Length: 428
Ligand SMILES: [Zn+2]
Image (cartoon, rainbow, N blue to C red; front, side):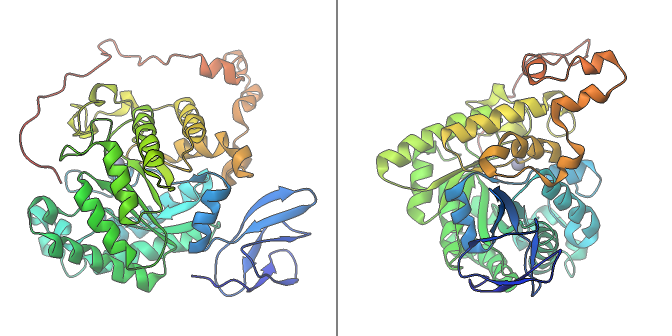
């Protein structure tokens, strides 16, 4: 973690500054850069001054206290579509095999306004990497240590280009549902922790847990790092895969020591916000003062609202999800409703593309005090006036887009899917 009281140099000048707090003011320039290879600062205008917020691990919680933090979006699903991840396995060996592809996706999210670069370490525990024979012929290269190291380096490199934080990501391990026990599961998490420690990430993010008990073990492992902890589960209003309600999941995550709790994946934004509201009320009643986070999927999933298995049971998963895709108008509404509910960490999971993240960052630009770096190519609805075609210039208002019901354009389109009945058995 960067200590307070450091020297910084303005990018467009030669002045040096010493500061003793995480927020300070300087009279000139819009960006400054840490002298010794650290991070860039985000900027918010305050009268004639620029206010610089230093992004350290400590600053994560301070930033949540001062306004919304924008997460990033989909990695494993997006990189599968781009040809760098294998469907079914959903493992992140691309960080060593195709690092440029991973780095570019981080950059796309940074440009869209993400405050956080989450390491692409989803399913990168040794037991998941070898689960069902995945990568059995490549274990020299494709292993937990190598993948986590490479993922941290890629996330840090891009984060430093734009003042973002690096979150070390943990996800479920197959050993949990195979009943290998706490020692085994904790051991898998701790192997990832070793690398996160070496790579000096800013905070920890455990996610996609389907069972509250595994989330608690992950939080126990994360606590050994003495960094801020965020933890989210893939639960909806129906609760987790062991029948625990979202209210109890939230309380148990807070009780275990998470600073930020919430949901990710599995349900669309509006179902996820229903779940968050249930969690929020329960946390308040139980006296827990933690931040809330939400990172839903980028598709409409209303059929599975009450199905604890989540969106992967939809018959269209994973190769025909496009007709369900959220528009950026949907995402702007989601961002506003999440903020109004009091959620302070707002991002996306599977299916959330960079332009969806940009819609969050643009919608909350006033609250965040900054627009996304890609604003030079985003004039909002107004930019449609630049078209030579009337059918675009007529659509240059927010009202037009908010009142539009998008068509699918398909002769055989259907509104809702038929969901296969549940079968007994656990899911990883
Ligand atoms: Zn997801």
